[in-house]
Image (cartoon, rainbow, N blue to C red; front, side):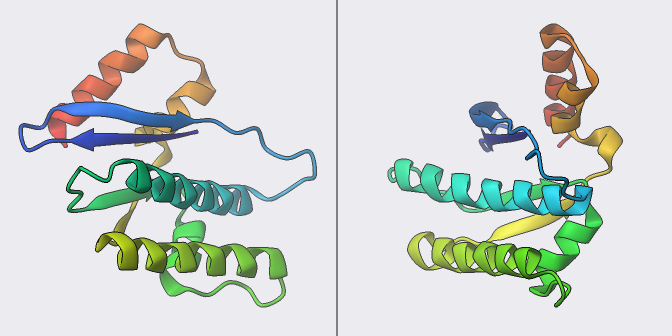
Length: 142
């Protein structure tokens, strides 16, 4: 599950995009699934930046609760024995460079513990009103 939202100078947040994807039937490890989530986020950001041509985006953050996937992306390296992971890391880095060239902005990657990850709240079963309450509280703090 991923969210894309904006935050203005006045700290007002607006949801732009949300996406959930079911894990593939073929068993993939959790770090690989998290890497795929980062890949999906980068693809979505590319599309959103294309659509927001009139908006001046100064920075954006990609947040993950998996340090292994973040480490692969930030180091630009993956285990040489896993071609699939190596290709996804290359795809992510290529897309980031393309975003930087076309829009003059590079993502800042951040780690968030699973308990603080709003995307994970929905996988645990939560009401919409409680979810909104938690998001409002967290955006005021951020």
